[in-house]
Length: 609
Image (cartoon, rainbow, N blue to C red; front, top):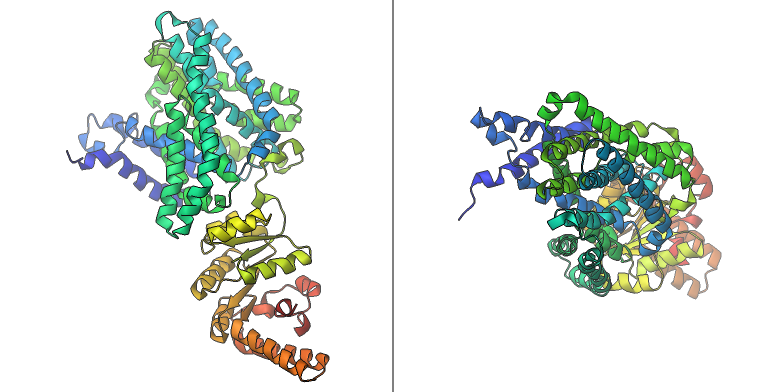
């Protein structure tokens, strides 16, 4: 049976919403998260969807069934964790184990105990109180992390501490779901050895994924990269993220945990930068869909009908959880300001609270009324997260990064080092890198040959596989802090694309590019390249120098004449109207003092050496 247009209504509504919200909120300098949440509230079953019962025509522009998009929206969290893991590694993760299991473990246990005690005092059964306490103790990975990234706070102390706690919470999802299942069973017991038997498949799945991933993932991407097919590379990336998520989901764990593990395995490979660029658009869309689904679940009528109890519960559990977080953070050695920021960020509820409470209500562990109230309260606090983080962004303490315990989370491109980016690591690129190393300059190389990248990476060189014509890849490789960009590719179109993209991103960046001939060099100067090195001219000058010296002309006179000729060519190739920046137009006076512009220090001297 062919699906009708109504089967795609929710998806079409979301795409239309994304097309309007992202540019609109970007123009307003507001987080798109606010827009997606607001769209979910407005279009959801408690917004326009509720009015569609009386006005049927509104059903065409409303989300009447959240479950239609909920399953797809779950992938947003999985893709987010995958991208975060790509910036980590096993080594970095081990460095923060005390924070993950110490800070994260204490937070979850203490918050659960206190919130469960409060729920028990509010006439909830012990089982219901434990479920509600553990559910409300969870925080929102899907909203907090992208909000921290957007405000450039992830690599501050509060951002890294938040990530450590959220990671432990993700690890705890499977045991908590199992607890709900056991409490919903006959007699509500069985938490003893049954827990070990239930978790055994999950542990086996994780060990198998870790072992097989190390053996399979790198060869898989090497094989795919060798085809030079962008479509196949996209398919491989999606296969890894979705496949790993489904494996852990089938074993009782969260999909996000499987995606996180896959990201950790790929973080050590040369393909991770290109994978990040490939996955980023999918992550953004799916996270937007997740935020829409969160907003759609918010029942405004419940808030309007019982505003004081609902808002009071939301504020109450936020205050309790934030207070516990502050005390534990201080116990772990965080300064008072940082502990307060952490409490504010992690105080609201999370998406896993909705899952746990939903499962508990379905199993009869939690009453429908209590579950609805807790769900609305959790959702209400989740909607406030972007605003809280936006306020946090104005705090001076958030911009300081002086806690070495969190150094394991520093992404390579954000480490503050000024590298020279070398695009193309063939014979020319390797010689450039060798000269940079000789002068004690750091470099990062990019090449599209997977075999060459694997070989040079095994030799200890910092090199990544990828298509450097994509500005997103250059950003991932740190073009914002790069000292210079050297393009050594022999493909004229690719060189021009890279120069154009890099110059639009960094007007002040020193760019030296390999040119095919004098005509190509002129075109590159018109694109505002700092220096273009024509192969034919350089070869001619090198031959001239060799023959003149060999027939007895003094070396000093030969070198001087070669440099004069090189300067003549450079002046001839650069645009006469000065529209091209070239060497003389882009360098600041400070840069000139560090590197004179005389012919003896020109771009070809590196080749002469």
